[in-house]
Length: 226
Length: 399
Image (cartoon, rainbow over all chains, first blue to last red; front, top):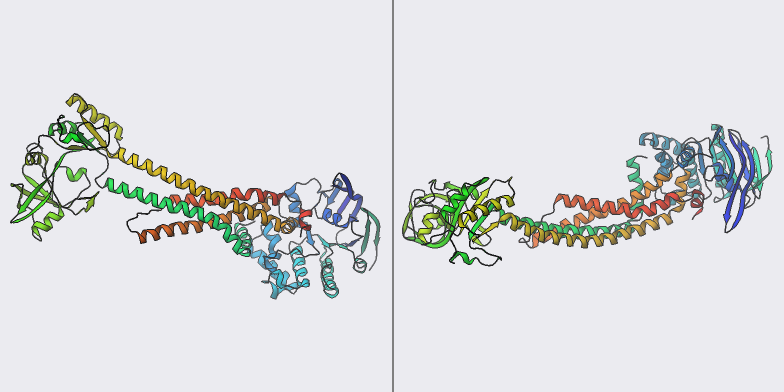
């Protein structure tokens, strides 16, 4: 359902061309649990941004659900992001002015979903993630784990098909990190495709499919039965 | 995105940076307050002058003997030029569009009733006086004698004369002595108060022909012509001038139109209002720079948030609208504050100095608010465009 064909991404730094992704061919099936690992600068973040349509390939094609999304304009790409893709970041990226519930509501506000439906969906999610009594708290009144759970609720509130997580446990202590990870893995039961970018080999090894990157290339792609 | 959500999002950032937003809005508020305050006073003065002038009714043109080139005193009244007479008044009455023609002259005389005397102003007027000038008769009415020349000795007395000479008695039908002659009282005027320093209640009105006899004069001091409201003053002035030259052979008279006097007054006040508006405009410009500054800061500070919004599926246009509406929200609130300040200070001044007339036209208030919003919009465009065009990936990693 996700297919990258010959995807390259080069950046211009000064007068030099730096390749962040080189000839990437990758196919991800629906419901897969994939981890992407590699040292800093290996291109794993660029890969994630590419998959999330935040970045455009310099060359090559990106097919999502059979459609070529490389050629979409800003508005169409925004729509795909809104409806099919969820992001979870290392630094949570909650809007500090808004309450936990409002942060979860944000994607639905942008999508123009009516208030009643939004409230209903937010209530269910907050309950599922054990955040019901934190709904009216601002992010700075929440612990790191709670913040990341709010962020995950926000990423899943539009029922995306792909969840892209960039070091989701990077800013959390070990225990909280594991809890967050369990929460993300629980989403697999709903059929979501989970893509996890991480430094941590122990976390990366939990995925059903481990991809290692180096210098903008995929150097290994291993499936493991669990 | 719904408008309500836009307002919630916009006001959330406003509430987060309360002090900063308040100070930015204050720039606009001061500008708007200055414009509103000064135009309120200007408009108040304007209306005051207009009311003073038009107390006598509008659409009146006055013809006076003697040609004056300047606004100085009219020596023609006592000079040797040809008089303006009751015949002239009759001739003017036959012009098209004319409603009433009131011959007039003024003098002082002693009036007496049953041993009480009072020195007062005597106005020689025409029978349609109360219709042409907006002055109401309280009881009785003006004489109805059709021929001005032959009008009998009748008098309409002012409210003060009735009070002083008659007390609670009804003066109608009694005989009042004016300068030694007997005049039958046919009407009493409603109290009017002072107009441009003249006490209109300490006055008696008698037919112009009788006043000419009383003051031993052969001409009138003026003839007032009231004409239909839909006729331009210029047309009427031309008609009157032609008729008078036809009768007198040359232009030995002066035509004064209320409308012209008001126009001069208005244009002076308009220039004042414009100057005030320009001053306010400068402070609004300063306010706009404030908004530009604060929005530029906001975009820089919230770059990561913009990246997040894009990742959550916001279109470039939505980001643009969000920041534009923040700028507009700031300036609209500033404008509203300025309106309240301006009107408040104007009304406060009016309470302190009741003689100072103030009036805030609604149109100005609405225009001022619209101006404030437009300024916010204009000042917000550049920062909002910058926000919308940020690269999502770079924006997300800005901390």
